[in-house]
Image (spheres, rainbow, N blue to C red):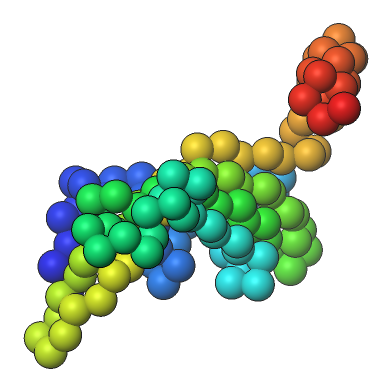
Length: 133
Ligand SMILES: [Zn+2]
């Protein structure tokens, strides 16, 4: 398989996920569960999907959300991961296929979050009010 390692630094595929260390126990690895991984095309990509000139490699943009679970059976922490994605064409000896690559942009870890001072929690509540109501 031809892979430009530099291009994909920081990006991953569903078959080749990074070994992120768990922020709670520091010994487990955060694993990506297929059932808890959702990705969708952005609105601009959806609008172009059926066009003849649409080229996934140059034009497709994805957004994704995943719940990562710690592999340490004594921990089992859950961390939310959000990010963007793009499409590449990959070849092997016989064939080629489109492969989605995901680029993590944000990790949300509830336990660490609650360790922030109270003032941050108040700020967060105010912001969520603005965003969601
Ligand atoms: Zn853990």
